[in-house]
Image 1 (cartoon, rainbow, N blue to C red):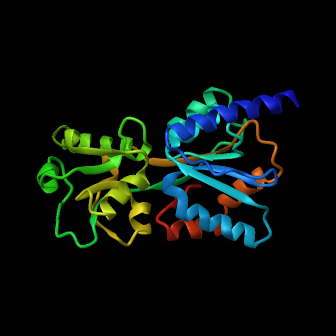
Image 2: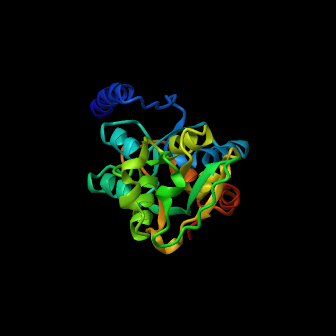
Length: 261
């Protein structure tokens, strides 16, 4: 009981910190299974959860934000049961601190990286070494996740650096808190171009893909999944198994993801 109370106090501090940062973490009831997942997973994971519940699974609540923000919330005691990160580094961080259940970690999904513009944009760009991305911005900003903290931004920066385009555009980056926020900047026309995951572009018909970043220009985008060490929810392992199933694979594919073996 003392351990539970301690966890609750840490979570209260975490919630207060989250509010100060503008982070919204959905509350879960005692019966709900709480999943913390990268913002880029929202549409796909919501669909998988809906299927899980339609087939008789229990109540599941999902909270979406940047992997960095969620990992820090978990570190501070957030009562999450499952974490799905948009890159291995934040899962590594939790594992190094003993915050995920031993043996529960697996690589779940991979993704691609694309350059997007508003749907009615006439901009054309061919992504290649040395391409003139700054010129394509035409005085505007490049929307992307914060390249110092947000996985999509970290991957995007790596791609642009490998293509010798980063130094020119770095002062013109609109640093978003997560990849969905970057996508929204482009969708609303507040940024002429953005770097987002392939799955994000597939989920929003108000943007269009200008070009795909070559796979060799950035590290493989891997979404690891794990059960949180403090979780006592009886269905946590069952949901992780469902997320790795053929049924989930078909749903993830509709949203631009590939389920990893």
